Amino acid sequence: MITPDRIKLPRAFWLGVDQLNISRSLLIKQAELPLTVGLEQTKVTTAQFFALWSALEQLNGPNVGIELASTMDSKVLPPSFLVAYHAKNFLDAVQRVVRYKSLCAPEELILEAGDKYTKIVPHWQFAGSHHTPSALTDATFVSIIALGRTGTENSIPNVKLELRRAKSQAVADYFQCPIKWNAEQDSLYISNNMLNLPFNQFNTELTAILDSALDAQLNQQQTSASMSDKVRWLLRRSLTAGRPELKSIARELAVSERTLQRQLTSEGGSFQMILSDIRHELALEYLRETENDLSEIAYMLGYGDQASFFRAFQAWENITPSKWREKHRLKNNV
Image 1 (cartoon, helix red, strand yellow):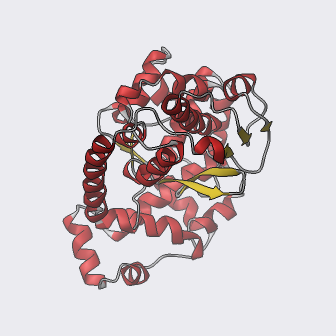
Image 2 (tube, rainbow, N blue to C red):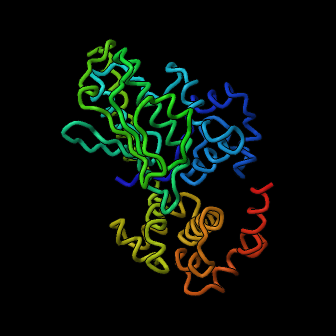
């Protein structure tokens, strides 16, 4: 299945922001996103979602992920977590969260079972070369451990962590476990003995009802992805291979070029519009978050030469890429 790069911000996220006394409008402004991001049911891209979490770190410090996840009320959590609280055991709960992650984000939780521990690694399909904000990783791991602690009424002591982030006393205090800081990958290890602990609120009838509802929602999402979303996904994946063509995208989607053009038009867009939009979106990400030379960015965006990239960027932002990068570096250092 092609998962669109669209994330519906859960109500629990905004309620957590409110409880930390962080202004929603200030957060959105700090993330350099349109104010419409704060509206109910608004969906954002992975890059925009990462920008929100990075802005949270800038406004509230590096431990905001721990703080925000700890304030979340289970009553307003997404359905995928609600059904997990009534699972058979901790492992069953984690597997349910993994299964339904695709309902709310292009994110995977990769499980790797070992003899003594099961390793959990978050993976964002559209992150590219950009690292997940530390606060977001903290919040993800907190939510998993909190799920286990609540469901089993056990402190879940037998865990280990490997984190890309620098040492944090708040993180150490919450998890109370061995932690490898400045690691190459963010990983949570949970003892298989802990994963086998039963959940006290296990409810066969309730999980069956919630599973049925979530399955229906998942099936609907799988069949309702727009052609524009599919094209966006393929373009992001294929840009560095050179200038993408309508013909190659149509071939991957198993439709004719004419059919593809017609469907994109019916959705209010065109291949060239989507291509330009993806290039603009990625250009801002690369300039903000990487140290790549402009020539390298031009290549990653599928341009044949640097001059073509410069002309396109000036049309988008009315400024050169180098000046845009310098402007945002100065702003972040203020």
